[in-house]
Image 1: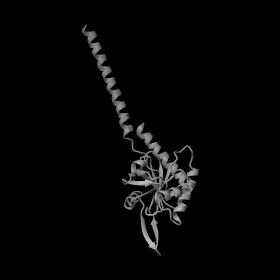
Image 2: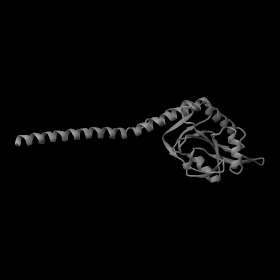
Image 3: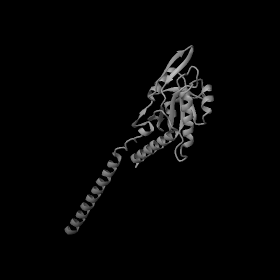
Length: 223
């Protein structure tokens, strides 16, 4: 009788040890997966592109788009966006930049998420929603614009690593502004800065590499 009880106790202890060991192994694997270092940001200097290892949050803002609708930082969530600071009366930099973005849009693989293109106005006094709509519609349906309070636009531009300065020449307003593109991820954060000169083929390649890197990191965290 004692022998039978002893055998059962021994078997129970062995089973308990096996369960504990299995739990430790599984727990260790979960811990390691959950604490894996993220994949470093891709090196894209050949495309004049700097990618942030940790995306940067934008300034909070409330502005108006080309349709007269209110847009906030939260409105940028859910899609990739290539933002550019400029203005509709810009005589040179802006038309060239927008044309490059339109060509880039045509070059992107249909297997990739199709980004929005956002013109952040540096001249809100003249860039009314109506004027922005006429301007952005010329380049494509996924081109949009933002206008509104000047100080708010300055703060948004600053968080896009951009600046703009107003000056008057012979009674005409001119706006000096940054010429780079800011790539925003679907969390509405600054993921990369793409400096000029801009080549549509390089822009398309840079976007695809950044997207694949971000996707791999998401899968790494969620696995």
